[in-house]
Length: 301
Image (cartoon, rainbow, N blue to C red; front, top):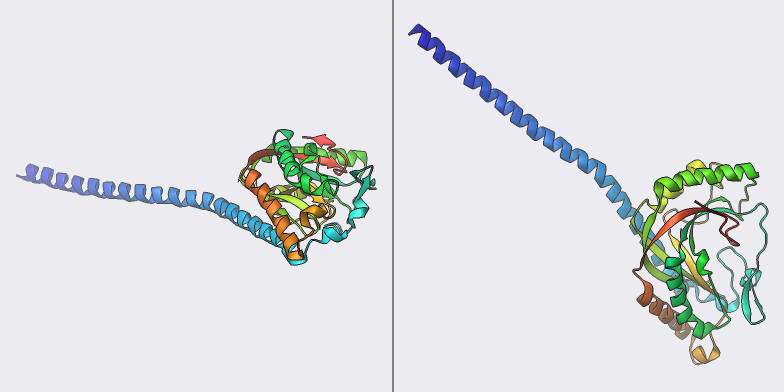
C-alpha cells in the first residue's frame, strides 16, 4: 500500500509539474510572437508613415504650384521675372527666328547633383510637349533639351552662394556622390501632374513609387558635402523637372478675342491636354554630378 501510494503521489506531482511547464511554455510562445509582431510593426510603420508624409508634402507643394498661375497671372506675357529673379531677356534671346539660351559662365561654376532622366523616357515627354504647345507659341517658347531632362537634388555650389573648389576638391565631391548614388539609386517615379507657373515654366511634378525618398537623398548628400550652401534652392521633398518655358504670348489668332481670364483658361486647357496624355507615366532615374549643369552633364555615376 505504501509503495502504491508513493507511486500515485509521484504521478500526481509529475502531472502538476508537467502542466505548469506546459502553461509556462505556452505563455512564453504567445509573448514571443507578440514581441515579434510589435517589433515588425515598429520597424515597418515609421518607414511607411514617413513615405506617406513625404508624398503628402509633395502633393501640397504641387497644389500650390498649380495655383500660382491663377494667383499671380501670366507674368511671362510681360517679360516677367524668372524663378531666379532674372528677366526672361537675361536668359533667352530670339535670334534668327529661334530661341537661344544666354549661357553665362559661372565663376565658380555651379556644382549640382541631379537625378538624370534617360532619353528612353524623356523623348516621348518632349514630343508630347512639342506637339501640344508648339502650334500655338511657335518661336515664343523654349523646349528643354530631352537629353538634359533632370531633377535638381542638391547643390555643392549655386548662383546665390558660390562655393569655390579646386579640381581635387571637385573630384572628391564627385566620389562622395558616387558612393551615395550606389546605395540609393535607382529611383522609380511616376508623373503626378504637369503645371504651368506664372513665370511660364512648364514643370513635370513627380511622386516616388519605390526607392529612396528625395528628402533622404538630399540629407545624405548634405552629409557628404559639408561645404555646400546651407540654403538650398528647393524644398527637400520636391521632385520636378522643366519641360519647357513660355517666353511670350501665343499667336494672336489663338487668343485675340480672349479676356485675361480667358487667356488663363486657354493656358490651363493646354496643360490639361498634356496631363491627359502623359500623366501617370512611370520612369527610372539615377543620380548624377553636374558641373554647370545649365550647359552640359559633366559626370555620370
